[in-house]
Length: 145
Image (cartoon, rainbow, N blue to C red):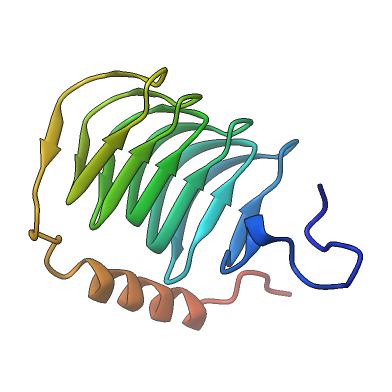
């Protein structure tokens, strides 16, 4: 399915998604966003998102994920920490620590690690730290002559 349907409007899967790592893509490093991200390919490193982090069935993450809310339908090897909801769907596979305000693990999902549920205890300074990092990154040009 493409990003846009026949009417030129975004397909529902991508509504509100600011960043997309494509299915046949590989990225190593750190992604920091004040929005949301969809991981459909292979990612190695650290993801920090103020919004939603979605690891789709074709997505593989080797590293840490910090997000406002997180849905894992693919594979993650590393710690996963959500300020809000953290969901592992039936196709999701996680090896690492899980931490969230509310954790949902569907029947058929697999995880190996420690689980911590912290209702009402959102990480202090999470959004502010991401905003500062984004502002600092905007000052530094990605490409230079």
